[in-house]
Amino acid sequence: MNTSIPPLIDIGANLAHSSFSHDLDQVLEQSRAAGIGHIIVTGTDLESVAAALTLSREHAGYLTLTAGFHPHVASTFDAEAGRQIEHYARLPEVVAVGETGLDFNRDYSPRDQQEDAFARQLELAGKVQKPVFLHQRDAHDSFQRILREYRSHLTGGVVHCFTDTREALFDYLDLDMYIGVTGWICDERRGRALQDLVSEIPADRLLLETDAPYLLPRSLRPAPSSRRNEPRYLVEVLETVARCRGESAEQVAQHTSANARRLFGVTGAAA
Image 1: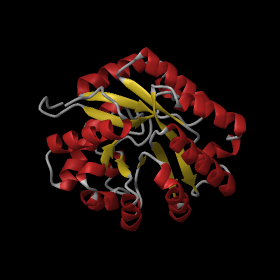
Image 2: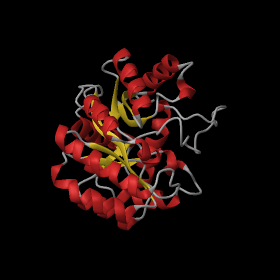
Image 3: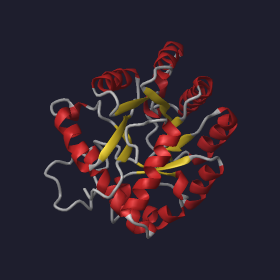
Image 4: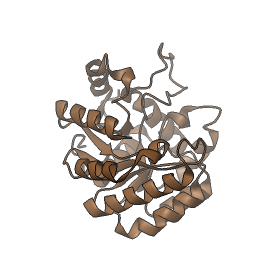
């Protein structure tokens, strides 16, 4: 990586995923070498949160985590799960509540249960005064309605892996949310709309993430032999975002890392 570019912060990587179980130390070594200064590990249920917490303690200062229930598993978010997530959310290694939100595309959990789990996690985030890490797919109207109801109690949040419309973007910006951009923008097919839209995200509301091991940037050359995405490929997201915004990679790195430090309070990637 160009040494003039400030260290990057990957705000969302699923490093507790089984695909990293055999070589995580190497993955992290390569991430550091690529200029990734800090990684926030995404927690999506009790099992992944516990695993992410272990990783964050093994790599203290370089990894932190989120704690929450993804909408896909919202049907399992009962009172006991809520108590356990609150316990995790109060730990210093946990920088946000989530991944939480709504997914009406796949409906792996009934929509009413998704909405209930989402509202309860927003309430928790307000209670512990930590930001939220949000997921929304094909559910904008319901998602915005619930988020708006709880917004005044929240310290902030990010709509992770944004791929929606211009109208949705400005609805979230009106709620003072940050916007997370992944390797989706590197896809010459389905990422075209986001390529056109990313320049409209204010510099002080833009965040970068890989969502590893998902969403491997299609623009990587040479193409990796594995389809597994990794935090080191955040550099490809950075460069694509910078090109689409008409800015330098240094400018985008500076803004996005400062934004991540401000929202999540992480300190591992000071400029």
